[in-house]
Amino acid sequence: MRRGWFLPIAATLGFAFLYLPIISLVVFSFNESKLVTVWSGFSTKWYVELFKDKQMLNAAWLSLRIAFFSASFALVLGTLCAVALVRFKRFRGRTVLAGAVSAPLVMPDVITGLALLLLFVAMESTLGWPAGRGITTIIIAHTTFCMAYVTVVVQSRLSDLDLSLEEAAMDLGATPARVFFDITLPIIAPALVSGWLLAFTLSLDDLVIASFVSGPGSSTLPMVIFSKIRLGVSPDVNALATIIIGVVALGVVIATVIGFRSRRERRKTA
Amino acid sequence: MTLTGNQLPPPRRLRPWSGLERRLRDVGISGRTLVIAAPAIWLTVFFLVPLLVVFGISLATKQFGRPPYSPLLKTEDGTVQLTLHLSNYVKLFTDPLYVAAYLSSIRISLISTVITLFIGYPMAYAIARAPETWRNVLLMLVILPFWTSFLLRVYALSGFMRGNGVINQVLGVFGIQPLVMMQTDFAVYVGIVYTYLPFMILPLYTTLVKLDTSLLEASADLGSRPWQTFLSVTLPLSLPGIIAGSMLVFIPAIGEFVIPSLLGGPETLMIGRVLWDEFFTATNWPRAAAVAVAMLVVVVIPILLLQKAQDAVVEKEK
Image (cartoon, rainbow over all chains, first blue to last red):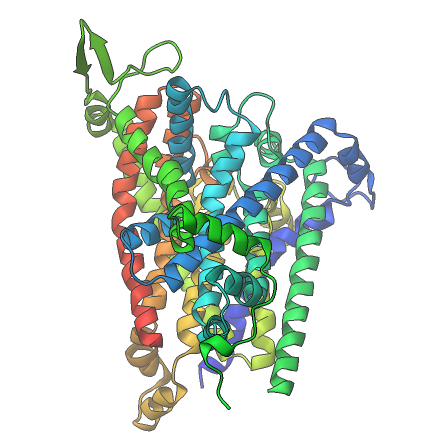
């Protein structure tokens, strides 16, 4: 049959397309020459250079703090939103809430960024808060678009949850809050972890929204990288990219292996 | 023996949050209200209201000062005056720059979406038909780039395509003249396809993996050639996946800023880039807001299509 060879070749070419640029970036981060594309010998000097770059390190630290707080706030709000949408089938404004929480998923970043900036400016001139823009406004902006992703992840886990467990706890006299914290939360914990991680990486990665709502002195890591690579290739960005890709790859592989194991064990006990 | 409500053992000592819950209930706020209100208030203040603010400011004009736009409401001699300007919208329709940027954004996004579909479909199908042990590994390989930085992936691609980049060095080995790829519309197409490919593959995979293979066998038994089976059975059944994947590529591509500004040339016009320049370079906030409103109009129809496609997938699962 024709499909016998066509699909594997198409898939191989597709994966090559996805991975070859990343692999070449990693390889050239160990290149001695400043010319990123001409190989002249193995060296780790760009990594040394990277850790001497004060501006880059400060931006990285700022981005990590923003990502931590945005992901945590987004986790709380996104989980509440998911519970509201899955557990409470009927309330006023449910369609509006469902639409408003999923719209940021597809909203172009330039619109979200501009809209929030104009809001902050209008609020500052009428309410006096937030005074200027910086880490607070970036965290608010990131929380808003990250909570959409958390809601999607938690929603899908909640909707295939076995309701009888919660009903049993309820029958035994537990209050709704107690049922949520003692029964629901532990069961959906893996979804919460992946939702938080997704929000964390999205916040860490955002360039456009942060550029709109940041103020002087609060340049995040993507903003610093962007201004650097706009001027051309720079080998220390390659080194930074290699570190990020390494951490992410390790994390995803570990998560997948853990996922595999627990699924296999569940199948064994079932 | 059966236990009635009164005979149940007293509940374990209540945790602190139960106390909080009781206190809130005493003042008339139920847990249910709180759960709905918290995200609803947040989204109203930081998502819905900002969109209204954008619309409002798009009706103002640029002026010097802080903030750099004319006020909509003015109180003069005790009367409130509302001043609305339509000049930004008039400009959008009459200035050839905006019209060209609009049309070329739609063209670039449309072409990239079609290319992504042609590359993503066989990949999704191959993963769906792969043995189960392979399937998870391949899926992980599709998702992995999605977790790494978008900006750094565009940067990796630029290193690959530039004048003395890897592609041209490989071509040089075969004695082929180096190609000019960077700073062209071609580079923007490649960039969009490269970064949004996972968004195309995942929804396609979810519809293709659920495809009933007995239908394919039946079609083959009745004498269809493989391509006939594909066109008359597989393709129509995977339509929701095709729509969802295409919209997930098309909608963000319309407003894309990073890809045209890093990979495209100065003549690569895209509406997201125009909005950016209007805001940061020209500091014409009302004009940028009008561009945003106009962009929203273009993406609303695909968003509704996406919603429909997702509903269709959910319906099928039931």
